[in-house]
Image (cartoon, rainbow, N blue to C red; front, top):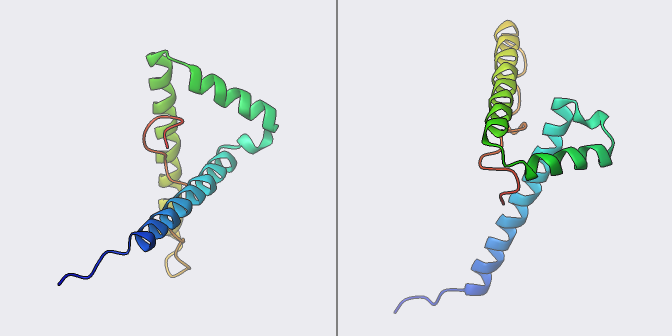
Length: 108
């Protein structure tokens, strides 16, 4: 006879995973704001800019922003790689830094 599934434990586990993912997303968004220098803006300015970005339907603008964002991450990766190439034998950088968000803005 099969052991009955513990739906309550499975549900709690899924809720814990969802909470952890949301916390990681919030942390990564904060790291992104800091790494782009947007932390110099006031909260109102940043919120207003993000609202405009999210409301923009112009595919050309969105594509241009995506290219600029990709270039930002590629440039950052190159700088990190060249710095670690020079620093052989030093401490290795820890994984878990800001990662590019996949999907569109506002997707959860």
